[in-house]
Image 1 (cartoon, rainbow, N blue to C red):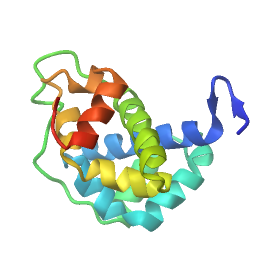
Image 2 (tube, helix red, strand yellow; image 1 turned 90 degrees about the horizontal axis):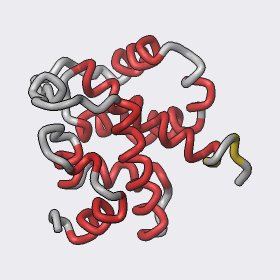
Image 3 (spheres, rainbow, N blue to C red; image 1 turned 30 degrees about the horizontal axis):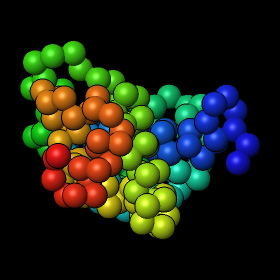
Image 4 (cartoon, helix red, strand yellow; image 1 turned 90 degrees about the vertical axis):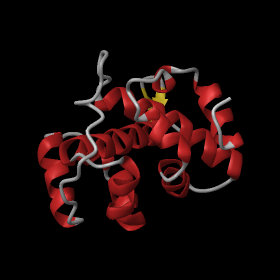
Length: 153
């Protein structure tokens, strides 16, 4: 696939999709699995397919549109507020998820969106989203192997 820069366009689209999920989760104080499940497969495919358009717009407005459309309510999960250390940006976390989702899709021979749904609904999502732990900045292969084993190694 032809890319702009070092990554393919679809890799950039997945990066934006994951970053938007994290942005929505922070804005609404919900766990990432809830956001993914509320958005649903069809909306996630739309975000992924049109990510190059959405990323040109203000992320706050784009997130607001999807929050309203998917009827995402305000929750009580505040991993940003509870963080005792330097808080990773939604872009930082988007990159972690993008790498893992790509590996899962290839390993399990499933679509990117199916892999995205599986990853966010797995145990590893809670581990990545605990900003007081070190998981989100661990080596991508360690995170992937932990995902495969269904436990932290």
